Length: 484
Image (cartoon, rainbow, N blue to C red; front, side, top):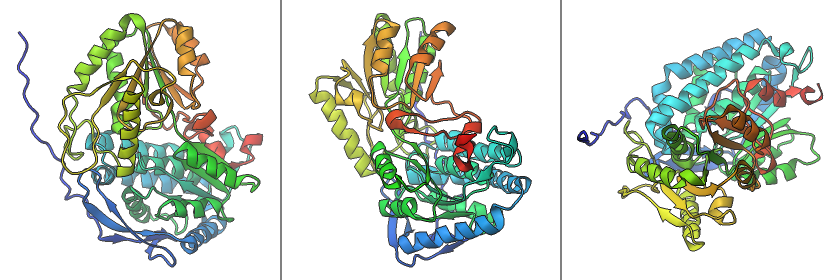
C-alpha cells in the first residue's frame, strides 16, 4: 500500500530583507554616480513583470570615466600593492558575501527568476567560495607555474550574462583582482541588481576606489567596454554570436581575450548506469536554473536497451517538479528570464514538433503573469533536427539513442560546440575511454553541473577558449603567462 501524498504548502522567502532603491547609478571610483552621456532603463522581475528599480545606462563617456578610474587605481594602488594585502580585501569581500547571503539570494531570485533554493544553495555560496579561493592565490602567484615573478596585465573589461549574475561576477572579478588587475564590469541589462549590491559590498569591504567599477546598460555599453583603448584584457561570457563579434573587433589590438560561450552538451547514459541516480543527474543537468546554463545537458543520449525505461522514469520525475514563484522554497522551476528568451524557446520547441520529434510535458499550470515555460521532453529526435543542434537555453531536453560507445561518441561530438558532457556508467575504464574522446572542455562522470573554484572550467570550438577557476584561470590575467 502506497503512502498518501500531501500537497506542499507555500513556503515563501520574505522580500523584506532586500532594501531596493528606486534608482541606481553607475559604480565608478568607489561611488554611485549619475551617467554623463547615458540614460536610464527599468529592470523587472520575470516572474511577475513587476518593475523593481530604475537603473542607469552607461554611455561612452561613462565607460571612459570607469576605465580611467580603473587605470588610476591599477597604477597607484592595486598594482603596486603586495599580494598579501590584496588577499585581505578578497577575504573581506568573501566574508561579507556570506554575511549578506540571504539578501543576495532573494535579490537574485527576484531579478533573475531562478528558484530561491538555487540562489541560496548554489549561486551565493559559490560566489563567496571564488573570492575565498583566489584570495589564497594572491600572495602565491610565483608558485602558480607562470614564472618566478608574474605581473598583472592592467585593466580588465568584463562582460557577464544574465543566467548567473552574481556568480559570473565573482568568476570574473576574483581571479583578476588576485592577480593584481583592476576591473570594469558590465552586467547583463536584464539582471543588474545583484552586481549593484555587490558594489555596496565592495564599499563595505573598503576596497580602494577604482579597483572595481560597474557600468550597467545594454549591448552598446558592453561594446564600449570591449573596444575602449584603455582596456588590456577582455573576458566575456555569453552567446557564441556575440563572442564572434568581440573576437573580430579585437583582432590586431593586442588585447588579451577569453570567451566562455554557448554549448549543446551530451549527457550519455549507458545500460549499466545507476538509473535512479542518472535520472536525478539528467533532471539537474537540464532543468537546473530553467535550463539557462551554457553547459546544460540538453542532449540526452541513452543506450537502446534502457531507453524506454529511462524516458518513463524521467516523465514520472518531471511530474513531481514544482513550477512557480521563485521565492517559494518548494519551487523547482522558476521563470524564464525575459520575453525575448521565452520567444526563442517557444520557436525552437515548435521547430522540434514540426520536424517530427514527439513532445511531452507534465500537467503544469503556468502563472498568469510573468514568463514561463514548462519542463519539456522530446523523444524521437534526429541529430539533424534544430533541437539537437541549436542551443535552446531553456527547460527542453532532446532524447537520442545509441547502441555502442563509438556511436555515442559520434553523436555526442556531432556539434559545433565543445563546452561540457556527462557520462553515466559503473565502469571506470569506460568513463576514461569516453572522457578522452569527447570533444568537450569539461566531462562529468556519474554527476552533472558540479562546480568548484579550484577546478578550471571552459570549452573550445564554438564554446570559446580560456579557462576560469583553478590555477589555469589565473593565466588569463597574468602578463607572459601563456609564454611560460
